Image (cartoon, rainbow, N blue to C red):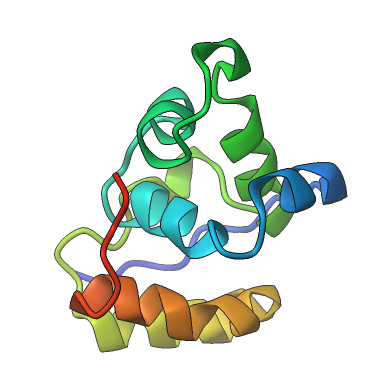
Length: 113
């Protein structure tokens, strides 16, 4: 069931954006928005970074786009089309990453988690 999109709390984190890298951003988005993984799990299991990061890198990236706890796991059970449509409407800053995110959701690109 679709609910009102939670308000974004954008906190620019350019460093996290560059540290994670454009090729990993769709993976992090999928892990958080679909799977509801915690920041530490994303750093460890998706980005394969040492535990010393303690989730700071993925948290910084997600906060850069405005995502917070209310968005965690939001798209679990949603159709890919409905989820991607909502993201394209509500978070225009994600436009360049949505094709790769769609590919992960549909299985065309493997998820690294």
